[in-house]
Length: 120
Image 1: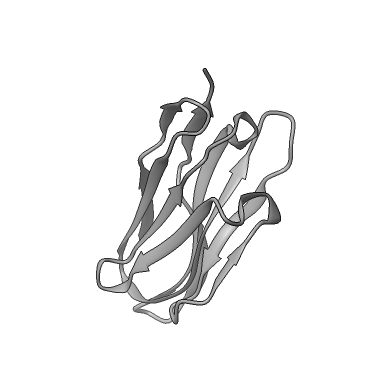
Image 2: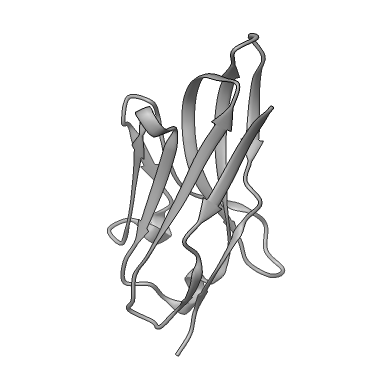
């Protein structure tokens, strides 16, 4: 059984910052890609940022230069540092990870989501 637990969402004013964390736990052998997606009301879920186990990153054009993604492989944790937040960043943010379990199964897992609201 593998779980992803997110933390760090909340309400912030435009121009502010937030840091999201997502910790994976359970019968984990290795984690390949970890990333963050978001879904605003009435919109499709979209990729925000992703990072491989080797540190290669990928960002949505809308967040380049404002968001950074990092991970601590020893803690099976991924972070999303969000700076210069805009109202259009308001969404539920979901952690995602491709995880190889100790019994050999490889699956794609999601966290429960954390709300980020950017508003004055």
